Amino acid sequence: MLNVHHLRTLAEVVSTGSFAAAAVSLGYTASAVSQQMTALERATGLVLFERGARSARPTSAARHLASRGAGLIDQLTGVERDARSLAAGARGVVRLGSFPTASAALVPGAIARLLRRTPEVAVQLDEGEPDDLVAALRSGSVDVAVVYRYPLSPRRWPPDMVATPLLDDPLRLTVAADHRIVTRPSWRLADLAGETWIASRETTAGARALARLCADAGFTPRVAFRSNDYAVVRALVRAGLGVALVPALADALGTGGGVHQCAVTDARGGPARREVFVLHRPDSSAPLVPATVEALRRAAEGLGRRINRQEPTCAPGTAS
Image 1 (tube, rainbow, N blue to C red):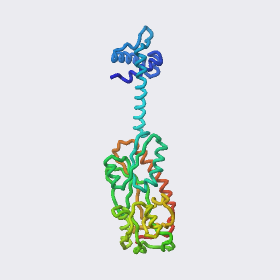
Image 2 (spheres, rainbow, N blue to C red; image 1 turned 180 degrees about the vertical axis):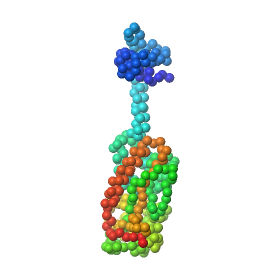
Image 3 (spheres, helix red, strand yellow; image 1 turned 135 degrees about the vertical axis):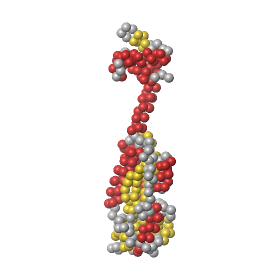
Image 4 (cartoon, helix red, strand yellow; image 1 turned 135 degrees about the horizontal axis):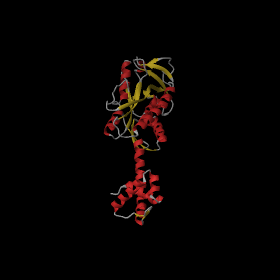
């Protein structure tokens, strides 16, 4: 197989007209250029130069070989450039997993930030609940996953994954605009023991967190409607069909008015909330992972400030 470095040197000799000029251009000595051309003649069986006492004139074979090799050298240069870009995280594909609320409220800003810095990057997005996304990380079908957990329904992230906190997402009691507690100066969650509740699916951490919060207040919520789509949950509340516990992140989507929100304090006196993290494998070979995590972290900072500025529209209540 021909040595590509020798072909590159041949092209430079043909272009510049001499071994000495090619040596200056390539950063070699004239002797090194001569040795490379001798090696190329030996490898091809061609006479590439008519050598005189003070000159070496390219033959027609040398010009033909240099012309044919030019395209190959350009392609190789492009491959080398792509390899450097991939290694530096300046191009390539990153596979991102996220839960639906974050996909709508957090992920778009993070992807936009990432693409502004690295426009040649492609992002693939897939959605799922935390258990699905952890499994996808383990299998390698995603590189980075945005997940959540509820302190009221504790869970640990796998020890073989790096978990970076993104933001705290306060839980809001969401009621119809004309609900009786809206005008109360204070209230307790126990005041809602007789209400119809709207919750996420029974197997979800959100449903378990609601059950725990209500248990701390001394009752079991009577759940009549279940949906993992917070737009649906708010629509049911707006229609006066029940009350719900909705993460503030869902309201960052602008899912419409007609409801009031109340801050909720858990039994320990802190705000009821869920916590949002980004996970990745520490041994990931994807160079874009650090840049993606940083883009998510930056986007979460801005989103967290916006959430904290959203004041609840009725007095805070407590689970106790």
